[in-house]
Structure formats: C-alpha cells, structure tokens
Length: 354
Image (cartoon, rainbow, N blue to C red; front, top):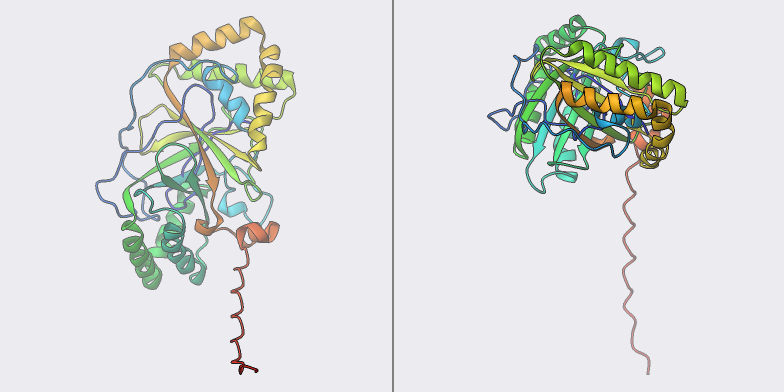
C-alpha cells in the first residue's frame, strides 16, 4: 500500500487524503455553523481557517520517515477520481477537486445516512447530471463522510453549477435532499484543491476498483515551499531505487484551509494493501540509506508543523459514479437487492384422529 495526495472539488463529493507518515491528517476545512449540507455546485468557497491542534511534534518514523514516509507507503493503489471530461476515455488525474465533509451525529450513519444520500443520487440520475462523485466513510477519527468530485478545470465546475441553476427541478430536489440529510449531521464543511504533478509519484487516476482510501494532510510552514518540493523529490528517488509499489497523487489547497496545506491520497483494493506498504518499508529505508533518512527527518521537522492520516472505506450506496465504473464492477457499485424471503405456507387445520 502506498500513500498519495489528492485535491478537493466542490461540485463532487470524492474524498481524498494525503499520505505522508508524519502524523495523522488534520482537518483541513473549518466547520460550518449550520448542519445543512452546503450546495455542492456553488462557486469556490472563501478560504477558511484550519481547525486542528497546533502540535509541532515530528512523528516517529514508524513506517518510513516522518511525513514523506507515509506518502510512500499509502499510495499503492489509485489516487483520485478521474476528471469528468476524461471519463469516457483513459482516466487522467483531475486538476481540481472539491470535497464536502459531513460530520454525522452519533449513531446516525449507516443505513440512515445511506437513505438520505440516495435522494441526491436519484435526483442526479434523473437529471443525467454529469458531475459524478465518490463517497468515503471514516474508519478512524470522528464519524464523517467525504464526498469528492473532480474536474479538469474551474471552468468545467462552473458549467455544472450553471446546469443546476438552470434546472429548477434538479435544484429543488437537491434542496429537499439537503434538508433531510441535514437532520443527521452535526456540521458540514468544504474545500477545494488543485493537483500538483511535481509532488505526485506514479499516480493512479482510476478508483473504480478501490475499496479503501488513506488520506493524509500536511501543512508546510510559510517560506519553506522549496524545501517541501526538494523533500518530495528525495522521497521519490528513494522509491525509484527501491522499486517498490509506492504511488500517490498530491493536491494543494486552493480554498477552504490555510495556505500551505497539502493532501495525499492513497487508494487500496483491500486492507491487505496496507500490510504490503509496511512490508516494503525496509526496502525503501535501505534505498534511502542512513544519511538520507537522517536528512529527511531533519528537513521534515524544519518545514512541517503538522500532519495527520485517516482511513476511509468507499461507500457505493452514497456514491454517484459513471456507467463505466458500474460496468467495471457491478456487484460492488450496484449490488442487487436481497430478495425478500417467501412467506411460509399457512398450516392446514388437521382434524384430530381417534
């Protein structure tokens, strides 16, 4: 399993996460004051402050090295959802990601949340809305769902916003769905990220066969951008030398969090991929060498002031994906409902015999 980076797109709901092993991904987007889901097809949000602790402790190198170790381990599978414009062709890494986070009230997730989310999917399907999204449910940290939408550009996102504005029926359906969904939520927030090719490593754009997502968040101290890019280069060179399975996609904050915030996304086909990431750690550390690891640790401590990683499962019941994705694995994306058990035949009255 490897670590990767991703960005968020406000029109779709695909979750992404940054995987460098420094600490755990922090919450990158400020909480909304109301519990209603913000419009998914609105213009970019104003930048909001990051809500997280200000711990400056450099994580121990339990997998690789501080921050960049996680990236190398977590990105072994797909990184993010493909750009909507390329959905019919070979998937490409999206330029823009919009991520909506819904913090679910205690014990209001599961089937209850699946039901309210189905209203969004039904409305989008009926309108043949082109902006697809993937839903992620948290397996660590606070109960929440991430909805990730990807775009090839901000202009493409704007076109989808216009489609909703000009379709009164669709807009009304989304509004009703938001009100019902909001009853299950504590809060909602959103962020927008842009793809950074230089910080990414052999990214996989197709998530259609992914089942889990590791997301890590990193914040680079002001004035240390160059060292951040140099650090990523060092880590990638180590993976080249090790010949391991690492790969990830990296996204930088555009709206919704502090400048200098980056997300790494790593998709896994199964939890066994995480075991693979741990098992490949020694190979990568050997490729880096003692001096390389020491330098990596020192630079990480200097330029990074916080990081965090979380694990999510991909929820097909809350995702609105393309027909191509469904065809690639219909049992997962569109499972057939379980047939109701047939009622037992009524017992016939039997007359007592002497």
